Amino acid sequence: MKTISVFNNKGGVGKTTLTFHLAHALAELGHKVLMIDADPQCNLTIFSVDSDAISAIWEPEDPYIDEGIEITRATASKAQIKKLLANTRSLHFLLKPTEEGTGEFDNLSPPLKLAKNLDLIPGRLSLHSYEEKVASRWADAYRGDSLAIRTMTRIRNLAEEYSGIHSYDFVIIDTSPSLGALNKVIISTVDGFFVPAYPDLFSLYGIRNIGKSLAKWKQDFDTLYQLISTDKRKQFPNRFVTFLGYTIYNAKKYTYTPAYKWNLAQAHLSFAEKIPREIKTYIAPELRSHITETELETPIGETAVMHTHNTFPALAQHYHVPMWKVPSINALDAEHQNTVAGAAQRYRDTKDAYKSFARELLKRLKNV
Image 1 (cartoon, one colour):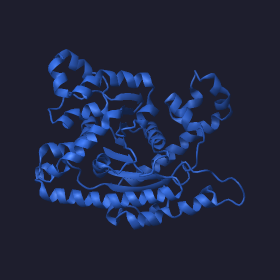
Image 2: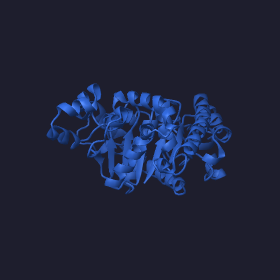
Image 3: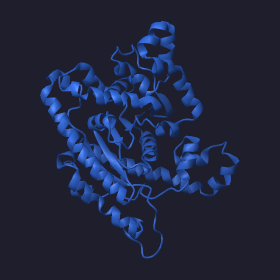
Image 4: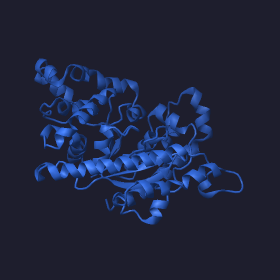
């Protein structure tokens, strides 16, 4: 099992759209995939399921989240807890025993099935309180405190536990654009991550911020490994995260003559061509050592998913399916029927594009 994150310090680059479609593409290629929504804004969960389904997951958890696990456990019967755990639970609910420093639940609740080979651990808006615990317990980890180390590794370990039960090939963890404590432990403990970048100045600075933060995070983890016992190190992955590369995403296609490289308008191309330079300057060589010079210079999948899909992602989110499945929906809303019918083949063509992107990413994951 490989754990992956799609990460950019710059919001609004289509990260959740890319994560959702990458997961579906991998699943349709025959790989078993679990998505974990670790973004407190819950964008991946909102993209994946409707509000009624989210409410059905969140509402039974409310007492445990609001009043605390131990208090609610003390008043709930074994049958009630068993019923609660028999259904899909949010990531924050699964992390709540670690947040409070209590014993874990006896069983893992089932993930939410989205499609063949594809499951989801939904997010929850309250996840920010877990981030506060990560930050407050960081210093204790240097002393080898078991709860602090558990807090830092629990999301990674949940991915491993779920994979042990369900035989996932890939776990994709969605994150916020923040460089805070929660993303520090997620990005540092996944196997690899890549950056979707819109070709503009802000994405260049986002890559700089990521590189600087990674250097600091690695220094912190290296210090931690030196201070804690060999046995406690086993809770962490064998190596610090690997950078898998970047992709240009959601860029406007330039369709006029003369055509520019990657079919980008000149203004976009000038920024896109600066991305590899920023990576070389700010992301340490040891974090990207397995990527060839050509791979570093080239967006993952090249132009496969580079250009904007205009309104297609909005309809995909509306119906909670990947873009290529939108034309096959039998009960399209009346206001969408003509729009979708007129672009049905373009919707379907996105399937091959995302599968091509997924295959290229798999090549980069082989040596991780």
